[in-house]
Image 1 (cartoon, rainbow, N blue to C red):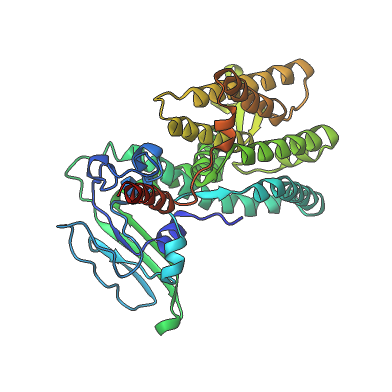
Image 2 (tube, one colour):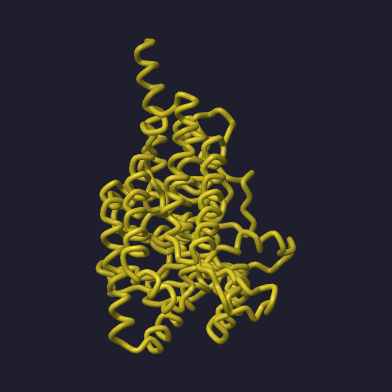
Length: 409
């Protein structure tokens, strides 16, 4: 399953992009458009509208909103790093590809969910063998550099919306574009097409400070900042399309976690040997040693992201019911806290590492299911499925009234 990053989403999905210095929800041209009976802004499907401004439609028929400026043809050059005009045209691999692309995060299918525990097991066993065969010092050095770069980018992306509130209105915000292509003429292909502004550079600089701190000291606070950034980006970029797929994914990882923790020492060995921000660490001797604590309890990021994308699905299901309540979201969120608390309690009682998903999966699935049984909404819960793209949903919603009007006539 390919993971589409921000660069690929912008490069492959969009024909034209307009970005303003301070784009707000009130200026979003899609805020009043109904997609399957809901506004895209309410669903959260169009957060890129708010983050990147007005996003055009692929193809030659795309038009910018009136008064927003004219689209500028980008120059034919292999590498450019320049100030960008207000409107930038991106090359699309073709109208069909652009048309079928979407701004939605990567959707996990039932097949992906079924294969995920197998892939995760192979990866875990491979890491275990690497640590047994090769020097742990050199492996962690390579991993530290790799996650140093990824952590800076993830943290910068995470803090960017929050940091925008602190910039004054008269902040000199300039737009930039980083373009890297391969080939020439008709065979030219865009490898990297990244757009950013001065505010993004400030966020990147702040994140780099945390990155250097982590690289030099491996401090647990820097580790947790990167870990939280990875978790938030993971929940943002991955979507479950229905509850059944979520149950398959959680059920498979339930077995995976129990086997590799209780059945072998592989999981614990890799977690202790792997010096990278793939886990959150909680100092158990914080009161004794303060920030220099060195005795930690660990929580893998998978124990945050996997239940997190299921809880996010239930939030979208709440919104689809149009009852102005978030019953299933709050239920699953409380269930997650309960399951995590139970994990910590059992760990302290038995003084042994515990597979968190052993307690999180039954709680996150069981609690919302009991609520659905009590409310008589089990059928609605398991029949709920998101459209593959917002455009398809919009097209479906537009076709329905058209057919109805024909019948009336």
